[in-house]
Image 1 (cartoon, rainbow, N blue to C red):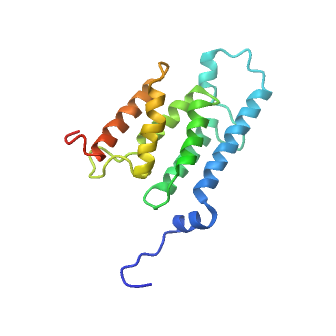
Image 2: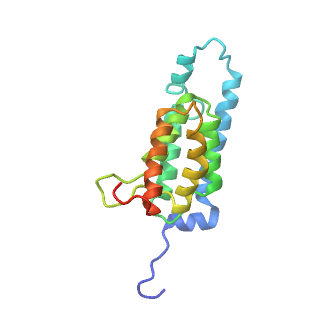
Length: 182
């Protein structure tokens, strides 16, 4: 190693050797499928919509944590792995996570949780960092153009989706030089 060369960090090495981020996303997908199977096994006919929307707060499907806590742990682990490590989530994982949380959520709250996670994956507006620190520029463009634009056109788009679209709209246009003072 020459002077000035940086040693790769542990997360980068794990990603190269075992595709660590892909493994965590796979755990997330498997957990999603397990919850779906367990929900089918339970007779949910007697629940009202409002009970179903909040049921994930208290339900434990596997392990000791509630459903919501398990999802937060997995999403935070992914965020940690991507933050400043040089590791990328990748378009395929973004597509998969969007499908699991937004297109086919087990509970309504999962959609809002995931959209907020994407939207909160930005640096503080008061810091010197420009918006998002866990996605590459190509991933940001993909999220905006291929995921958010078609989704926000849906008349059933919720407020979190609209806020996320607005944030990405400003960020992408600023990155492209279309907005100077945004």
